[in-house]
Image (cartoon, rainbow, N blue to C red; front, side, top):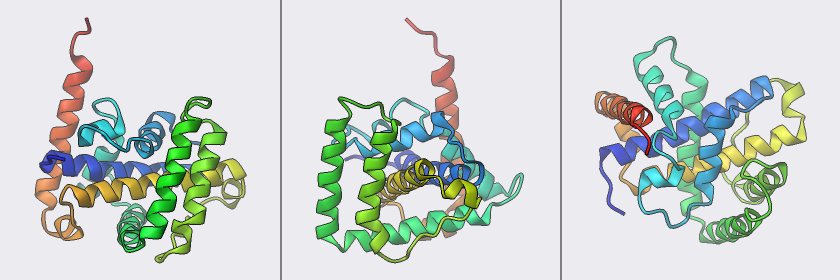
Length: 215
C-alpha cells in the first residue's frame, strides 16, 4: 500500500477519533454516531484500496484530526488522558503484533462480523457486541491493560461496555495502520509541527470536498 505523510495523519486521526469516542461514552453515556461510525467501519475493511478508504468517505476522521490539532496546540487545553489512551493503544498494538495466534483469532472474528453486516447495521447492538467480544477474548488479555475511566453509571451499562470495547478494537486497527504506513511514537515526540501541518491539510481537503457541487 502506497503511503505518504497524509496517510500517516489519517491513520493517527483514526486512533484519536476512536479514543475520543471511548471517552465520550465513558463520561456521558452517549456516542457521537458521526464520529463513531467511521471507526467501526474501519474494522471491516480488510482489503481497502488506500488509507483514506479504510475509514469511508473523505473527511471521515476529521474529528480525530481536530483532536490532534488541539493536543499539539494546547487549545483549548491539552487532554492528557486522551494522549495516555493513544499511547497505550500504540503499545498494545505492538504487543498484539507479537502474537500471531491472537491476530488469527481477531481475523476470524472480523470475518464473522463481515457476514453479520448483511443482517445488522454497522452500529447495531448485536454488531457492537460481537466486536466487543473479539476485544475481550484477545486484546484484553495482553499488556498494557487499558482501564477506561468515566462515570460508573455509564460504564456499568452493557451496551456502553460493548461500545467502548468495539471502539478500542477500532483504535488498535488504526494503530496497526499507523505503523504500517510508517508511523512511530518518535514522530509524535519529534515531528509535531509536521503532524500539525498534515492534520490541517487533511481538514482543508475534507472541507473542500464538502463544498464541492454534487452532480
